[in-house]
Length: 257
Ligand SMILES: O=C(O)C(=O)C[C@]1(C(=O)O)C=C[C@@H](O)C=C1
Image 1: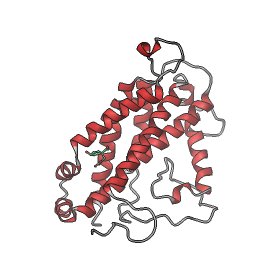
Image 2: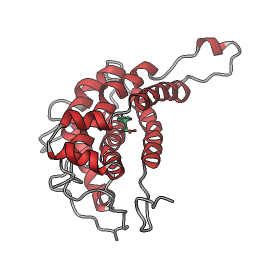
Image 3: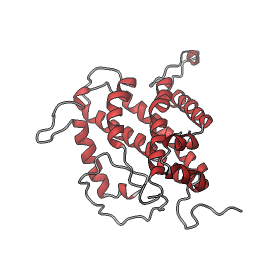
Image 4: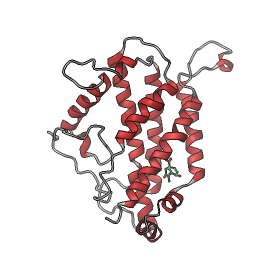
């Protein structure tokens, strides 16, 4: 019998368990897309300085302040969580839970939220949100925040995936890490067939969770969706999976520090 990766009590990370976690996070992301798509683009949420005395957008104001509140109640004590604005976050005020420390300390702090932020507003939103203004800026920012958090958590979960893979094939990874062979690392950590399954499942989830439900007979043939299922699948294909892989490579490059 093989020993479990973590013999201490607490959360156990294995390739199966991290993949299970990624699958569950798909639900959160698909629901997040559906919730954000309820509102129009509402560009005033993202531009100009709408808040007196605050140098940033309304969305930035909501995210910064919400992260500060959540930091005070311990959100970022969990190594699976990564803030968008880590600068000047207040300390937690609550007793901390002892989360399983699974990551390599020198690689654990990777945070690519600055890129995620930019991609989200510049590329993702326009791909699934209808243009226009319905005035719901606060609700829009709140739904952006929960979707951003879900996407960020998923992408940074790459650290856990990478650590599992490293422990399973330490020798193979070590030589690639020592020669800083990014391409070789990318190749070793890639499973094309898993990626294809992820994309297909996400498309199906967008169909199942996002279909407009009616009780009228005959409507089964005219099903419509709240978010175009192919948009959800492409979001994974073009951004979420590639960024999760970038996090894995970045993590591995620091794995022997
Ligand atoms: O499941 C894995 O092994 C992962 O690394 C996750 C993931 C993904 O982002 O979904 C990324 C790279 C692999 O090629 C397959 C899937």
